[in-house]
Image 1 (cartoon, rainbow, N blue to C red):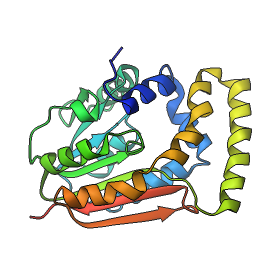
Image 2: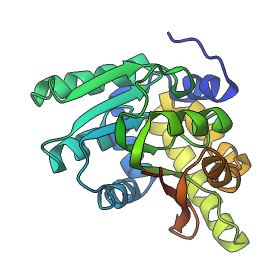
Image 3: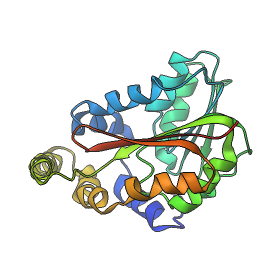
Image 4: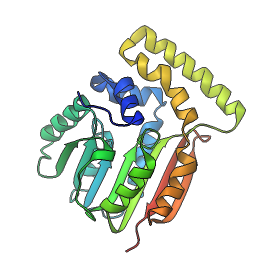
Length: 235
């Protein structure tokens, strides 16, 4: 098992350990199908990608959407968890994508990647766990001139009524998890509080600007339960 060097890395290993086999089904059901919508949002904003870096690539859901849509792309996936990446590697082989994919098992903060290589850097669900000052600087190093960032994660709604509804839905989902898939309990016991306490939507845009990115934009969706940050590295 990988060793955690940061609090965020330790959290990921704690709450997601042993969940790779049914991750795809759980993320689809627990987000009421919105996960697919959020990933399409990212795909629709990619412009003629050739070298794509998918951070926290997991089982490869977003990665393979990219390779399916863009037949000339080479995708590099980075993920901390061995079991998640094993699923992605197996799927890559099944799809005949060995020549178009590279898989690196590493925490994002510790990844050793070539500078100025990637014209698109994408991620789902990383920002709330990341050491964001470190990651912002790494993104600036890895991104090619003119390259684009497309980053997504959960956000916590500011409207108390939406928050109350979200909490009810969350408790119902947690009860179902306890009945039907108890190996997911560590995740869903903590996830609400993790998202609520995260300041990523407040601090990450500014960190990216400080790292030299331009056109940094923060977009909320689904009553501010999801957020996206897009940015561009100067050419």
